[in-house]
Length: 168
Image (spheres, rainbow, N blue to C red):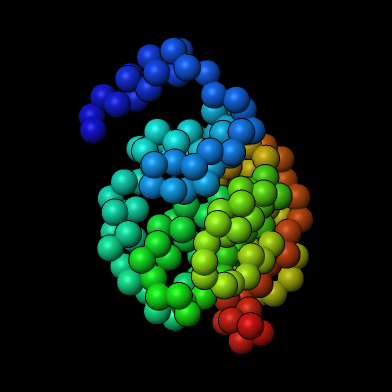
């Protein structure tokens, strides 16, 4: 609800969480505490993209779910929350910063699937990704360089979605 960010400032002063600690949120989502990262912090606070997560929770998916730029897997987890057991997933994430959190999330899911360390682009190959290891926003990396990016750049595997799906 509006103004909740102010209450969280008070709450975090009253109780310090252990950085790196793995917790299970009230909705059962597994999360590694990272108070600097906007994505992890807002997931913990329950303010991360609430309308989207509410919509994803309403779905009953029954076949393939593809999460491009999966980050730590929160949208994948919510999309599969009410899915059929035989629904499977592909989580695509090129950032080594996000991979441990994504693997943590998928290890707590009943559905089978693949976590692939690659980006999606218009051709298969290697491209430079910018904004890797941005400690304040793990979801900020991009194949397109712009002035708003923090972190550094590194080459990542890029795949076309249609060729990747055909392979699996």
